[in-house]
Length: 319
Picture 1 (tube, rainbow, N blue to C red):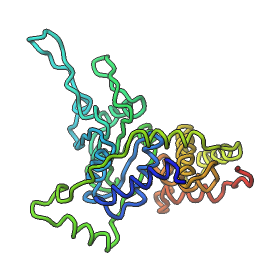
Picture 2: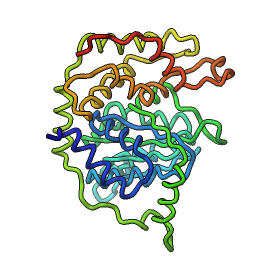
Picture 3: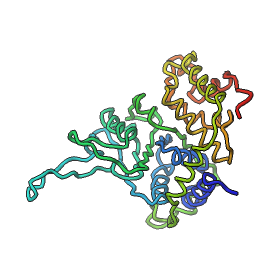
Picture 4: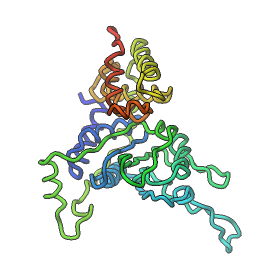
């Protein structure tokens, strides 16, 4: 019998793959984030379908979708909203910004300055926005999907470490394989172009199924040995020779939470070390701040994560 988590994954893949092609690992990561309730950072060059991916996910969740196009002059009030005075009512009324949506695509997040980037922190961590000393709650399953250009592109700002830590996962998008790129061309090569060339699936994923999947994840058993394994991974990252800022406690918690979901998606009743290893790269790589020597030697964050996993002893009994 298929579990709720497995059913959710199947539904998400079947419906999303009618619109986006060659993104199986990204769809898997979105499923992890959806069940966990975390936010996702997509990194890749422009033109790979990040906006279409976010819009299609919002449609599948039956929620409101908003897009924030980041520029160097974007102000915090542009995304949170402002209070406008209505003379006829003699009071200020909130003109809500694009953050008041179920799924928010923050496109090219590292093209805007640190001040506006920081305005996202409360929304991502607390699920609320404070405007003029008044706090407003965001939708229950508020989800941020931010896209980021590679840092070597002109006109980009590195994200603050505190904001990177708020993203549950970073998923890397690369150019599609030739057969998938041909499928994209055949599907979207229509007069007028744009995302409207293909009609998105109208059926939505029920909130009940998502809640059932989350309840299943809560029942997944985690042994003390696996907890200690994750703690050792975090400690190894903090003492690694190529890392100046290692995995935070929030990062270790994210690693544990996503490993739980990974176990549920394979139909498991308990977390094993392999579940932790499968999610380690997308959870850890963007959280590690490497030393200048690592950059000079051409060592990337993913390479460091692999080295940490290799040198951390795997518990023999994790059931």
